Image 1 (cartoon, rainbow, N blue to C red):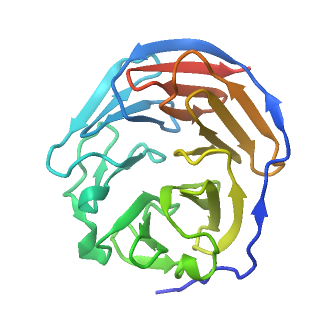
Image 2: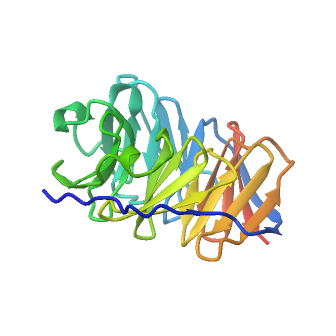
Length: 264
């Protein structure tokens, strides 16, 4: 097992200024959900407590999966549409689904691989997965055979902010950990700390091609990670509950319906 320690040099990046943007609605359809996700092929997933529904871009239901055995679904990683990861935080468990939302195997009790309390899970670049270990306060990367490949070390020892995880994702060859204080910690694919970006909101975030998206009930922020220029979008059509990215589109939900918008 390899152990990769965090850099001792900590620095925070702040947004420089905002650019106003607008949205054009292309599609709307009903779908009850707590949050939504969009995969790289443009399929939209509506997640509501113990059920996940897969829609095509026009809103047609393609498949669905539900379970009452493991509590509510905490998060869903659809970055690999053939290997969808469901995380059940209350039971510290995960389940892999195929592209038709059929289970690919048995539920994985994370305690059996040494993680009794997982704070978050996301896919890793090598078809494995990342877990935030709440007890050890560290990132751990596992192979697809559930073996530890690398780990970050205790984050509280090297990052001054108390770590209270809100969300975790891997994208752009980086791992992003969103903290409850709106700080987004960035790591490389081996778990080495890179930098901290201070966001406007601490909701769940989305990231794609160096763009980081956050939101509140009536405003959307799209941050360019390289330039630190931020697009700011006022949204008054309804109160935003969840958002996802697909190329130059935003998919926005109020919990009862899902709307697809072009970014102008």
